[in-house]
Image (cartoon, rainbow, N blue to C red; front, side, top):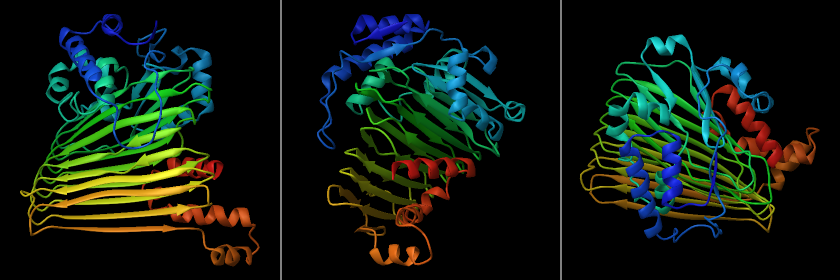
Length: 435
């Protein structure tokens, strides 16, 4: 089944094909009305989208498999070449999406014995409707922005995770998203619920081959972090340079909870992504560590948003960006410490490295403190590679190209050290290719 262009009948066709309940169909149609009423974002990079030419849904089989031998051989070989199948042995669970559907999902017995739920969002809507209804569309509402509304209308695939109270997973859960068709749109929907006194680490990877036509990736991620719980969400995004990556990610953090976004943006033509933490509970905390590499006229518009509501809340934003060959790496962030958030603290640190005269870096911070017992510290640096550092390394017998590479890897060290070892190694390889 393939659906190009968007209208009410096509949205109904997606819902009927998936055999969805009426509440989901209604949510889709309500979201489509909102999508039509909302303007395009008034900030950020310039880009053109012809919504009538996008493939909104494409799948030959929407059944979920748990054995790679039951996956089409050509698709299996594709993920094998990407290293996805090999990485499974280091994980507690993995989900793989190809075009519009999650085609593979598996989880180790230990996680199952702990009553962890890790499946596709469609499967969760059918089998765990009470949990899904409680959280779905509440942290990111369908009128939040135009692309959140679009996702609400045509979402397909994505992950659902539920971590029961008093449960800790020792290894990450992982999802991998692949766009493989010209002009394809991917609109996965991820919902993670970490119940009280629990923790989880979720890792996401994204790739696509290069075509002359732009593809659209407009995902929505909603995360609820319960009391004294922790969630870490790590992303290494390596979309091809014809993908528009327009994503909404947001977490609601309860009392004593911790949310960590580890966000890497290497690929895409345009990225607009600002992971957010709403620190609702007292003594909750949020961290966002991002790295963006803008190469060959890429536009990486990223950052973070921290909204402090509870007392004694803390947040940290660390943003590292590299731009070269005409690329534009922009930090766009917001920290708001509300009147109710007494004795709260936030630290924002933005470092930009510009490698040539054709490239640029911009910073657009918004910092607001609405009570007199809290504070925000903001630091920002913009620099070029020091010739003295290059000379020092070259004097040790290292080539100029290798010296620049080592300086780059050192510049983003804080980000790399937050990733699991195998993903840090993958990131090193991606950065070496892009630099």
